[in-house]
Amino acid sequence: MGISRIVRRDFPTLSPQDTLLEAARKLQKCKVNELPVVERGKLAGVFSISDLAAALVKESILGKTAPADVSRARSGLVGQHMSRAPRWLWEDADVASAMAFFIHHHGDCIPVLDRKGKVVGAVLADDVRGQMVAILAGEKRVKKGGAAGEAPAAGATPIDQLLHYIQARGSATAEEVAKQFRLPLEEVEEYALSLEKHGLLRLEYSILGKMKIMKKE
Image 1: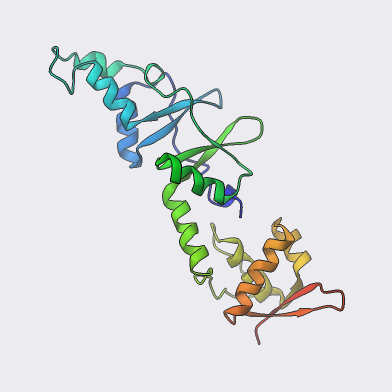
Image 2: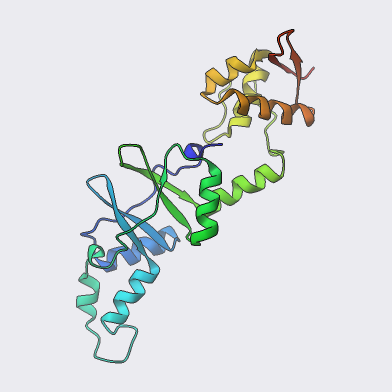
């Protein structure tokens, strides 16, 4: 399963020219511990709560070694304090790669880049945790679907889309579903087997072993 389905493409970012005050407000508003720093569409770094704290200690806002210069701290620039060796995921990476990142780096978001190096969004730890729960639950949160021809809700998972598609059409081959939703055939077959196991659809196989997915009668 690829991360493209859980990438937050409108995820907020910072610029190296943003002030520390602007960064602090955005971190607070987004309720995350770090944000990607983007310049001309490219990932320039990552700015975190730890970077902000270090900057404030340096200016003695959080320390007692010297009088604090609050105005200078407020107007300090993100680019002067950000981490310049950020980690990221490619847009075509799988969920397992995202899980591994959060296991080893303990952040709460990771920037996502396309193959040209442009920042296209971010993946949040909460969304990866949600995928882990769905996998462990065997995708039991699938929807029963609506009337024939009704489009699935925005943000529907691939398994929701598969179920809705079959309910609307009555039946389709696994190859047709894979082409419709641009999914690997193996992934479609895996989803179909899970749905059959939970009694939500039925499967038949041709003499050549090709899977046909049918609406549950």
